[in-house]
Length: 201
Image (cartoon, rainbow, N blue to C red; front, side, top):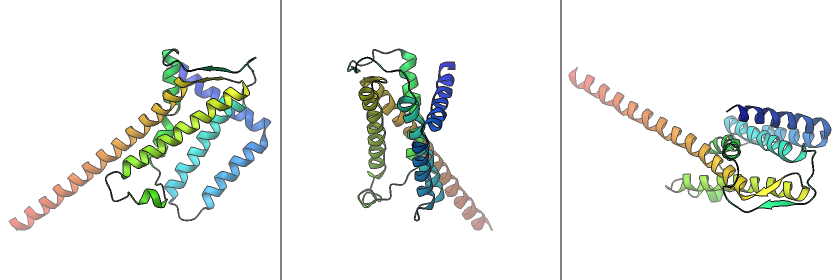
């Protein structure tokens, strides 16, 4: 996994370089972060998640588009699936893994979503919205790379990135559900034990 470590270092270095070269973009991100902090009606935990998502978007956007200096002679694209290197595909999956984990913790405070809050489909709707966001974001990255000629537009990247977000979302969601069931079972066991003690007394 050494390749992944150096890629992360490269992403961070790209973001720092871009921040130094383009202070306007950095100022815009800081204004968005401030706007999230002062926005009323949201829990502190959700504000932290939104802040982390904005930082993630900035990191990916700068390292994959804005900080790239080399330019292809012509726009390149590939619609072939699973033709890339295994480690490259694994990197694209793990790259969006944190985004899925962060999106799982968001409570989409909109009326259309809260209509389903008391229904079984509520969690599925949240999952679909999160994956749509991840898919649109990775498509924007690929289109920017294609139009600016700083990368190759590939379906592999879109599918792997979206799958990575789905994987991160699924792991966090499963962990939350398991933790809730364990907590509920402990509470039920505690009540039963208390009732038995009262009966014996």
